[in-house]
Image (cartoon, rainbow, N blue to C red; front, side, top):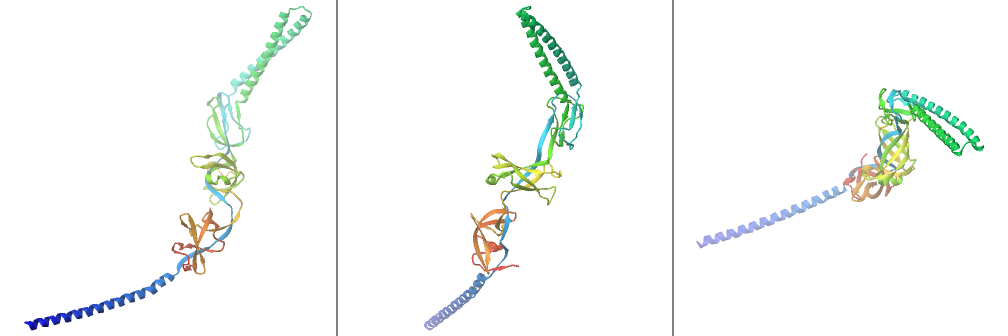
Length: 376
């Protein structure tokens, strides 16, 4: 029994030694594998670091550009007047329709004049009667004055004729005024255009009874137009009368129209924080119509040379604006100061010179000094 126990003890010790040797070999192999793995990764990481980033570039340009403000506006008639009746009566005729061109002083409507003509005739008769009464009183006054000097009539009798003469003079003046008034009303039965233009709207027809002050037609002047638009408060300081305005309308694609600033309104609109501006536009061919919607460019200064880049080249980091340029085969980060936007381009006021290669595609993957491959 004791011999069997000793044999088992020897076997257990031999097994433990074999297990320890196997574990040691496994550990050595694991370490070798780890070192081999680390050794393989280092060249791969270096290859990734040195791999070039594909980009597209654009050569920064110096262009002669004018500063401007963009807006939208509406074309309006240069002048508009509503023609009204100045007397009561039946509208005998109206000689224009919507769209009719009219000249200054052209007869456009007539009110039945019969009553006003009769009033004028009565006033003329009253004036003749007043003139006769005045002449009679004057003759009598002269006779009484001669008799009064010879003391053949009393002072009371002379004063009476003097009073009658004064009344006769007053009656004649009133008769003259009445005649002038009736004649004026008679002339107002014929209504003329106060300016040259085009009839925008006709509000009455022949046969209507017209009251004094009734609106008959509206006339607009369209050989010149007003272009009304708003400019933001921040740009108001650069506005001046006489500045050039260029605009387009949907009715004439690809065609530009021009005008000049004529009126700067005196106050800012509180709701929109903008200033209303009006430009004068020539329209001798009549192609432009009041009410057209217009896209407006207002030039606020002379042309100057400015460095510009595509807007897509810019990167924004809080309050900092930057871009990447390419020098050799390396990317260079530059912080820039931008100016005004010109369509798809942005002015670079500081930080970039003309002819530098600016990255326009792929800049989001760049850092300072990264190798780049410029795509052709």
